[in-house]
Image 1 (spheres, rainbow, N blue to C red):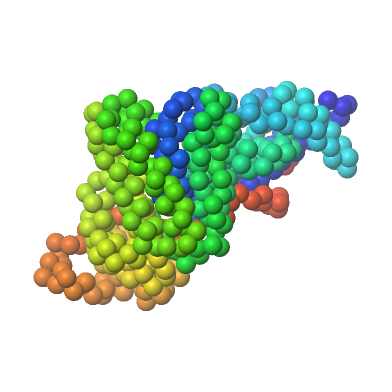
Image 2: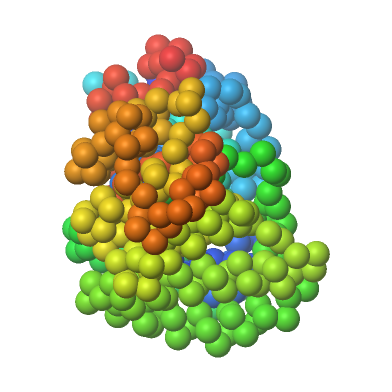
Length: 418
Ligand code: ADE
């Protein structure tokens, strides 16, 4: 390293979206490199509503690599963090800022320590794939800090080693994770299918289910499925390859009926292989099942699709705003909030759907008319308090740098959380 003051701190801040798979990833062929047994397809969610923000900093004054997640210091010892850090450092390049007196040569990066501060704008434990946005943001921001010249496809292969679904968060719109054939995972990367403007009529409503039950982690769940399920091989080899081709076509043609049928069927099959695991894994609960039943009329008329990840939350994708507005009214009728919850914190994200639905406060929720088919069964069909909150969102863009220093999570003078 050139002779220089030990005082400088170099910093980068980035924001990365999360994503939800419509053709699911479940099962690994390599646990350490995180290589999947089938391709998957996801939609990236608007980072205005669900995202990770990460600031990474480097300085000769830092004594060790450190990370803070949601304001608490965490260990970077795990293999997933170490793999990402090692792969990015191996691709780092020379960096110079004459004005600030900073000169870092390619090989210096191995000996310089980083500070990482990351924040998810949604509850990490809500089962909303926070590690997907988190590892995508970590890899993207470190790559920019260390002047890595590789494109987002190559970076996706590094993010994948942090969390499989993280590779798909390197792009906006609809994204395919190609499982690849190589043993070293070099061809197991994300590729963008269409950007977020291609199908911008879609509205996505996530029902975050109140759940006290501890779920099986995805990592151990998919390991147990691969070892014990008789159905998983049929799914990975026969079913998913065909669905991937059909789903790509449906997305390109904005063919909602085909998209919805494939999305719901793939979610169903994912939960079927979970139940085919020994011992069986149940991610959906009674509230999840009720959401499917309540939306089934719309699902049959091809205006709504549902998908459930490794948890009880329903992700409902509406064909357009009109369908989303009716769906939100229906959801609020059946799942009103607890009396101590205000509407502002019960429906978050894009609140304009609430406005379209003519709902301004909890009195409007109370006054929602019952759907005609349940007229006599109103009390039995109200499930107060079963949903923690709804998030209204849409397809969104990929990672971006936040150039404004005021958006950084670390202090430029100390390199510590602000
Ligand atoms: N896991 C959950 N959230 C994360 C984040 N923001 N960064 C890294 N790992 C995470």
